[in-house]
Figure 1 (tube, helix red, strand yellow):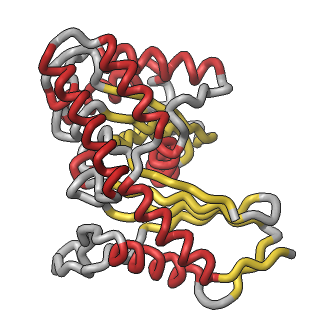
Figure 2 (tube, one colour):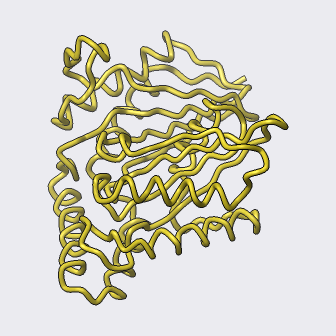
Figure 3 (tube, helix red, strand yellow):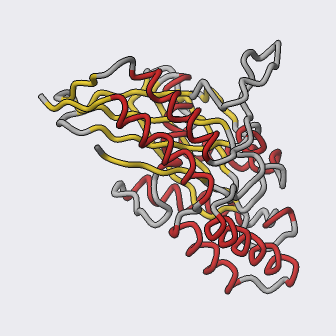
Length: 280
């Protein structure tokens, strides 16, 4: 049995929450650079260049990439041979978010109640997902999710006979409806299977995958690539300026489901796709 103290968890969450908002991952930057080389429309090229310049300025000055620093979403993969000591785990995570918000001068974006709408002023409470896994490690993944893209996400209970064709149709209809609102170019997480809430969870977890990661399931990889091509043919483009760069990546997570249902969820992230992780 391995022991991890909650103080260490708090410190790591604080650091990850800040880093997610300051430093755009290299895999995202590299994909945008490749898209910039292929685009021909001056407006589209300018939009992609501004995105890259903004990310570089944020990195150099340790300032938020976007004014909407997002709602904190924390994924905890807890090894079954890990013992958490020093206090409550949820409190430890929220202390980290609170500290990171203050130290990083991050905009408070969380309200205490969907109806009262009173700002908590420190971005707590975080949305926390826990999963028990094998081993004696603790993996912490922190995502900053802005409302502009989150509000464009969709879920639907398809018929079990619908299959890939209806899944593609649902995704394309959702992206058309979203248009330029989620600040494209976007990254799309697609959750397929499980139950209603499981599909939504899978769609968000899919966003944690590196953009350069290739899905080992050939059938799923082919579906991802096919949907990406069709989304880019919509020519919404960066900031709605057109061109062939509407989506940078699409990742699918799947799970077994009931014989009578086919849950599908789409979680959209803007080009400022912010997440960091650490393994303790």
